Every structure is written in C-alpha cells, then in structure tokens.
Image (cartoon, rainbow over all chains, first blue to last red; front, side, top):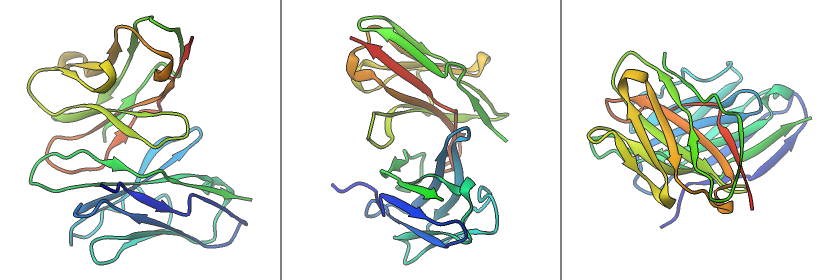
Length: 115
Length: 114
C-alpha cells in the first residue's frame, strides 16, 4: 500500500517568508509526527498528533512554527517568517493505534532551504 | 527527558567485515528501542525494534541488536557487511507506554568499501 507522502519534496524560500509543508499519512493511521533533520542537530521531534487529542507541541522550537491536522488525516506544518536556521529536512511519520506500541513509518521528507 | 548517544559518527569498513554500532540511552523508565536506516537518497526505514522479551532481536538484512538493560545499551551488529549496507543508521527510543515521540541519536554514517 501507499506509504507516508510529503510535499513539496524541495522548497527554497527567502528569509522572512512563510512556508507550508504537507504530510499525508498512511490511511488509517491515527498518530502523526513531525520531526526535523538538520546538520548538527540530528533528528529532533517537533509535534505529535494522536486522534482527536490535543497535540503534543513540546518540540516546536519557536512560536513561528505551528501545525494542523485536518479531519484526522492530512497535516500541514507552517513556518512563519522563516530564518536561515530553519533550513533542514522536515520529516513526517505516522503510526496506527491498535492499543499497543507501534512502529512509526516515515515519509521522504521536505528539504527546506532558506536563503 | 530521555537522550540517546551514538558515539561512532562515521565508520568505514571493508566488505565482509563484522559491524557493531554503539547506542546508549538515558531514561529512568522502561523503553522501546529502535534502529532505523537511511540509505542514500531514500527515507528512513525501520531496521529492527525491541519492545519486550528476548533481548536479542533480529531485523532485516541480517542485522541484529542486543538490549543490555544494565548498560542502557542497544548495539547494532552484523557479522558480515556488504557494500549495500552503506547508509546512515539511527538509534531511537521512546517510553514503554504506547505511541510516543521518538528520541533519536545523532546517527552513524557507515561506509562499506568494496
């Protein structure tokens, strides 16, 4: 079946502009995660959605970052007033919730470059 | 808060050599442990995972890892590497009570010389 998809695959923007990154999780997966992979920082957690519960936003680095998940499926990560340090690969993952511990499946990522 | 350490940043081996990549974690409770692999140009894929039971777990492509609770370690091993194992390897942990965010190590880049 289809895996996690993300768009765009690459995004180049100018400092100060807003960007939106999209994630389509695997159908039926109730949990959705955003991570960021950057040089020197490794892979870091950003935000986590689980069903209809309030999201865990504890990993968002500043209030310029926000994310939504509409209808329990597609998610959009928005970065306002982008800075050069926001340049990174933004990864989305999803997992099912069958009442136990689940594996997270990752998408290909969106490579963001802020000039 | 949990943390994960991967002390080997870049490992270079010849084909057929044995591999061991270190992973240590810091967390006060029970954890789930994962190794993910990222081949060049591809996205992260699960290599193997440990939730409970036998501390020696086997994954895809001949990889295995051993959970040693007393050492807070989950080292990845393969007895004989191949050129196609060239990739970046990430150790990750999350708390043992259901779906939770993963904490990753900084990754180990493995280069296999034919």
